[in-house]
Length: 245
Image (tube, rainbow, N blue to C red):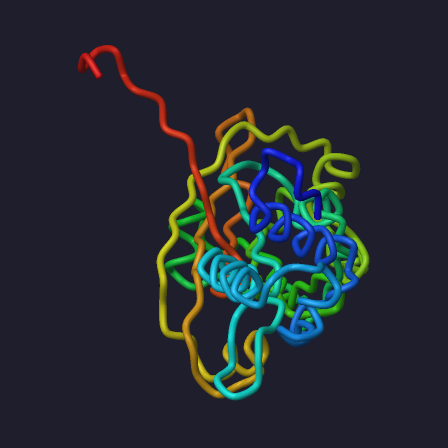
């Protein structure tokens, strides 16, 4: 700590602890050194240590367990509403993407899926159900529906190791135009909770996405359930001058 700096000691200490977390000297879920150990390590008062821990808990960087101490929180992934593959998104964050394929098969679509994908009677779809991983930890569950006429024989690809959007672009020459996406919090079914949260019940962030190509063809419908403690979504809205905002 630089006691001659114009930056307050507690701010310097917050940054020092955050840097140690960033460098993974303090790992997610790991207990922070005790107040006594931090006092000795940074040569500051115990009162300063307590203030810094309290500030970092308030910011969600740490959490406290009564009678045990302060622990490093899991990283919260900030997700934007944009067309981007899960794999690319994770790699940009320095995380290793992974997938476990639960189901991948050609099926008949029910009426709801037929309506969403604008299918004719008798058209088949590919159903892809994957558990998505970040650094080997469950982060989301995908239920993806793809028209067979748009992606013939896509089932030949190993979706545990492949990016679906890369295959769409490179193998099927798909050009994305726009997507429609909704998001809501929801109680999870037991199966989803067990896969995603490793417990029998809980909540998740449920996204429903319809993707369109440049010919206005609906090429994908995906329902994704995100781990609510690991994801936050953000958006940017622009004012419409027509309304004088």
